[in-house]
Length: 342
Ligand SMILES: [Mg+2]
Image (cartoon, rainbow, N blue to C red; front, side, top):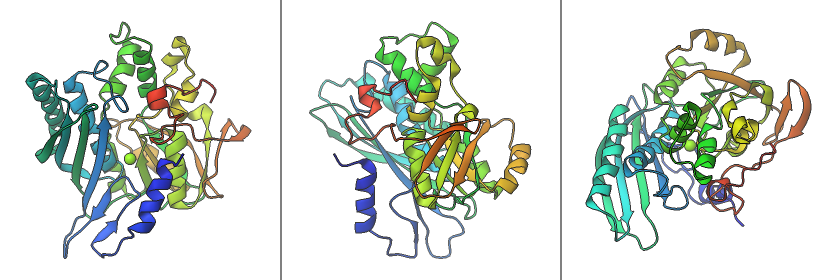
């Protein structure tokens, strides 16, 4: 079965950048374009949510779904350090959909867009015979020309993430186990992370403006899938110390392995970035306390595409990709097969 990465590589080869106004084409979190004499760049990204693949109507309200549909797009803008500005939404709706569902969906969409200063400016409507289809395109603007790409990482750079990893995947496990209403604070956090992730726009913007960061992306499919993408773009490998991962430890009491969730879970929508080792201390000293906390989880190493994990420098072994891939049957998003073994 062809993988998502293979399709993207095929498209990159087939549609190479042929204009000086395209700063980045296919293959990063967003495309980056400019116009003659512009002081800033425009960034464009599209993300699609398909019923029963990316969401289930009995696990989410239309308002929560609207919030998520815009958030996953804004996360891609955050990943490049851009400020969200506008978005459009295309919907394929099933015949039984109610007027109330549509109103609530757009309410969630626009309230979450508004929170991050992105305005709805258009879209399209069609019908669908096999589930709801949602496609959002978001447009952002760089501040100055400071945009962070996936490429740019170098051997020796310190590797960081924002926030907690694996909480959204824990929420998905709760839902697939039949828990829709949280009865504890940690259940509420996990369900909220899964149903209504909040993009790290402010952190992304600060990091891009700081001038210290070499490369960045967002974590949508899981660290074990996304980190190899960052490494491939930068031409390096990476090492992760699992003892340093910011885990959702409460998941252990639900018989889940917090390390496996953090490595393979997906849909965290946190940021992954690399900084020269010599700037790591300054980054940690100057990073604003009111933004999502950052954690140093490892470093970039020689050896393109090789990802290693270890615990406190011991038991090095290669990390296999086990996060979400739309074209692979063992994907954990719809099969819930994120095994407990990391
Ligand atoms: Mg992304």
